[in-house]
Image 1 (cartoon, rainbow over the protein chains, first blue to last red):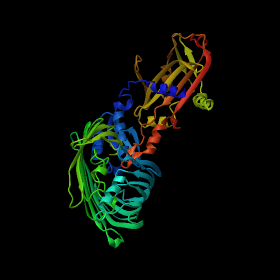
Image 2 (cartoon, one colour; image 1 turned 60 degrees about the vertical axis):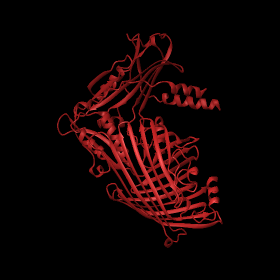
Image 3 (tube, rainbow over the protein chains, first blue to last red; image 1 turned 120 degrees about the vertical axis):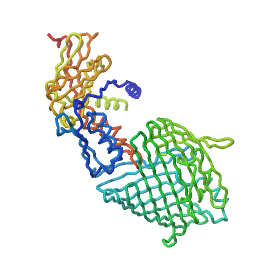
Image 4 (cartoon, rainbow over the protein chains, first blue to last red; image 1 turned 180 degrees about the vertical axis):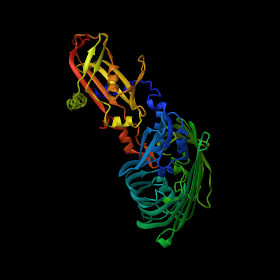
Length: 416
Length: 192
């Protein structure tokens, strides 16, 4: 009975008010200036900063100023932004004044991972974060069957200290995972027995990684650290092995917002992981990976072209081998069909187009081992999305582009 | 179990309406009912601060006639207040809806602005028996500030943000006022 009543209440339409844009009496005044603390201006995008200049001299518009405040809050996470309108220095003029305060102790619960893949099932993670001043403490849970060959589930946590207005960061992460393996991986390993090319499966994995990162110039970040992984192998005998490595990455991210319409984003990164016996590692290998992405936002149209490639020298544990066929690569395929043990060489490209709520993606890529045949695969995905932002949720149906029978893959989730 | 649930739901509806300290004075013209509330001050506290900081603040008013649990007539109105920074006076706009026309007024003091809203509130009484016992109910609710943090950040969806959004009706700082008068008969409050 109550359920029916509640459902009926939900169906009652809200009153439709004809909200006029000039309900604020101050809209007859001219904006003399938009004042924003200089210290925080560098954290804002160029287009947002240019909005400040654009508003000066215009008549006050409540909706416009509210939208501006919303954009500022979106770009200044972790800060409290207050908007005030005050009298200007000349009659009939007003000033839009922003005050920015660093939020004190701030706690948050974040979902970094939420995706369903019809062949690989759910991947889900939640992180609790406690921030105070420049310190951030995090603790979370995760079960993921999308990024690696195995499903890894467990706990992770870390600490990070930000200095020099966030340009320099130091911290560490610690993770404890339990691995589950698909029968396809076990069959492929059995077929490989006798060859020393591929490492075996493991039951548990403990990972600790301290590191430092610095923003050398605006948009260019260098990271350097070490990674200690200790895992319990299952075959041929249960024992502990280590993979200890020096890790380094260089990442650039720039946004170009010319005076005309359209916003361009360019991101690129190089990642190196060099496992060395001098750190007490049982494995010695180098893992090189590059990725690049170009994005164009033009009104309701959003297009993103992405490329990633990787190269492995030496014998690496399964978690460091490259895979294709998940929610972000070769979306029409299942990673166990593409390469059940991953590969030492990989290249992948994709074009992702969104128009309002429609999304279409073309993927192409190859993954293989040195001295073995490589085949380039293609897939197409189409579906609906709630937008182009990071909070958008998409539902896609993906098909491999190949001859013969092809089963569709359904993907539902966010951030992919 | 069902009875307990019913009691909880009833209490959650009834208790806010029982928290009435101000006086509501209804007047019936013969075709519509209007109210005044001399001691009602809804331009106060955080809402007043927002107005003095130059923001426009919307208020939802609902005047209703009830007989027991059933609502016989209801009339929702939205008024938007703003504060003239140079003239230091209030301006109010009653927004249009359906056949209801938009009305504006400016250069008002705080008290005059509050009174003007109530003077422009009415609920039609066509078809109602003037001898029937009923309650007059006024609900005023201030629009919430639109300063919520974005849900999504660089690291994913913020559950704290989501929880905050879905729990918004229960947020204690939402300014609302409920006034009730009755039971009474329309005949008893007819304007002479």
